[in-house]
Image 1 (spheres, rainbow, N blue to C red):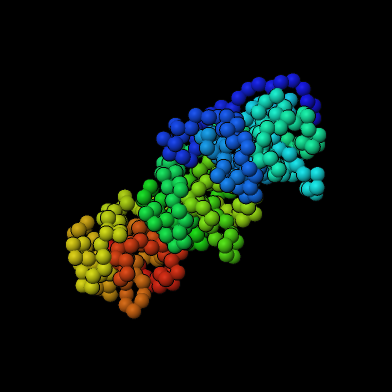
Image 2: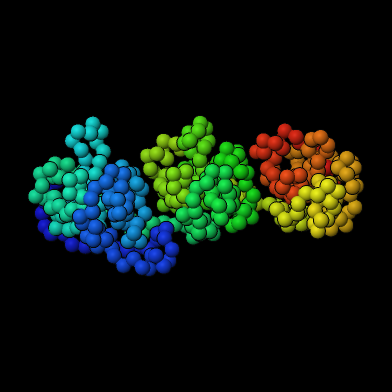
Length: 406
């Protein structure tokens, strides 16, 4: 490495951050200016906040994020994965400078600093906290120099509708078993809620069930809106899911944080990677009038024994009888056993939207096929619901038969 010449330049502000518009507009300092104001902040192992102190990567992450410029991963090794490698002689203020530990057997960066120009970096040390160091005058840091990386001009975030909608939930707390922004989200609950509200797509509830549907996608072909799955996080097997948003990043409800954005290239997620699925095609077949009518009652009409209309509620056969009468003027028999005899039998592999599907329980229970292995039907506990026959642990083994009403 050669030390020569004073370098000038700057780091372009981007404005693509995960803060509100008012928060972003209130930020006027560049990362370098922000870092200057933090000189003297003490070192704190694991620290990411000036109130408690920083460690090296926590300092850099904080400086970039609060200046509204770039959102970086938490660890030094993961921050290093981002950006373009440049020569020290071509370093510009705002570039990230990485150092290694001579004691480390692996040739990996263990420390990160912000280049301030004229051979100087702003970083944090155990003894002095945040300081400015002239690397050219310090054999300690010269011997440990590893690389300079320049971050991209901007962070890619897709303008896809579902991605934009997902960003609205950043910061919602993680709550195991929750799927409501007023309460919180777990990982699969967040995506289930998002896809229903944004795209009208009804997904199974758990990460394992969501993995069972959709089209498998190679990592090289992944696009915004695809789901990314991970295994062996808090339990064996498929245990976490997020949604890809572009630029090597995904949005997810993190068990240790809230709804947040992470990088696929982070070491933790690389180790847990399982695969990607495309689920954006799993829309209800609302072009079919029977399906379209039935879908209007999802979550709106309760179960009522003997119920045959939305004003009072439905029982299982009362619901299918009502929908067919309203849409096609066909008067189906009142009970499921009669409805099963009212049409032409259909193989499960040949189901079409609007067909009647029957499940076997204590009695025969009818449902309306809505496409993509989904049925709309009535349950005692939740009223009119949509169920994926492929993934539901309760319903998938209760399929009995199907008929087509002409």
